[in-house]
Length: 158
Figure 1 (cartoon, rainbow, N blue to C red):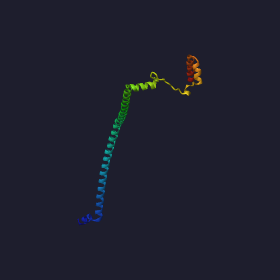
Figure 2: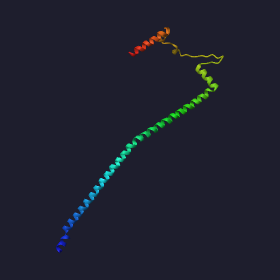
Figure 3: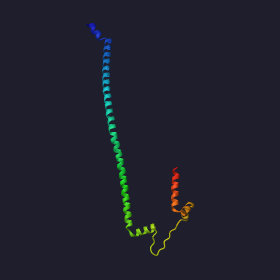
Figure 4: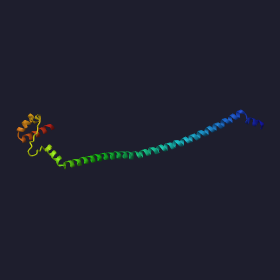
């Protein structure tokens, strides 16, 4: 037995046992790590799948929400423009109810004059001269001018 104990406590035996124990620990830790990795990989894949599903599920409603917000902003802008236009028209209506403003506009736009006044209208001398084409058209009967217009329209289609 003494030989056996000695062999049990020999350096070579101790080193061999130590190597076997270390190898067993390393093997156990590797299998645990691999088990953890595979579990994390499965969890990560599930999490990625859930996130992708959420993104796809929420993409259309978010796009609709943004689109509707843009429409609301556009309608509010149009409403503000309509309010301003109504205010302008109310101001114009109030001005036209004033007799002095109405008289001024009538004189300016329709060239009315009060009794005893002399009205003058100045015509641009260049605008008053008819072109040669207008002079010949004015000398002809109206139906001839209409017929020429029909002929010109027919020729432009060809």
